[in-house]
Length: 249
Ligand SMILES: [Zn+2]
Image (cartoon, rainbow, N blue to C red; front, side, top):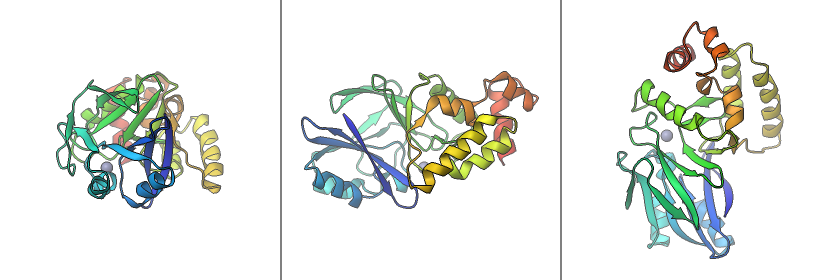
């Protein structure tokens, strides 16, 4: 299976997973249909499924037009999310299914929205995580509680450190200065800031993120590090996470 990264809207990413043998494709969070249709057409691929992480318009905006063009495609989303246009399949924690001949398992990760899910490909080490984690930051907590977001991020933090995280927005460069403020003594953040600047200067995406790098430099994933927690005079875990959320305003 091959992954194609498409830039869409202002700073969204749409991912197309391609089964090169069968000439079929699956799309993750199509914010708009045009770039997806163009990419499919160029490679002569037919769309079999749309995987939505949550209901926000910049993740599902392309659903209906894509379904008009590929009426047999199925729309997947979380069972607690609702509001996903034309949803056919309602998924819960640990549900497994096959995508382009690879096994995918669902992580239920509420917080940004109430039914936000991630699509995890254990064998490939890929996580499609929508708006829950970004380079150096986490998603805004719109519908859930900080406690829910903490549990969701903890679930992600416990995946193998070499997991590639395909998040839905290019936010890394924008949030590095805030990460540096929230974790002032972390020299890895400064190194990363420099690297990210170089990548963005040439228009190169910073995705996929590497989980190990987030564990090292993303203040919202550093809650279990005792040294980091001590900067906040708190115990590692939820206590620290809540203080980081508070400090980030
Ligand atoms: Zn969102």
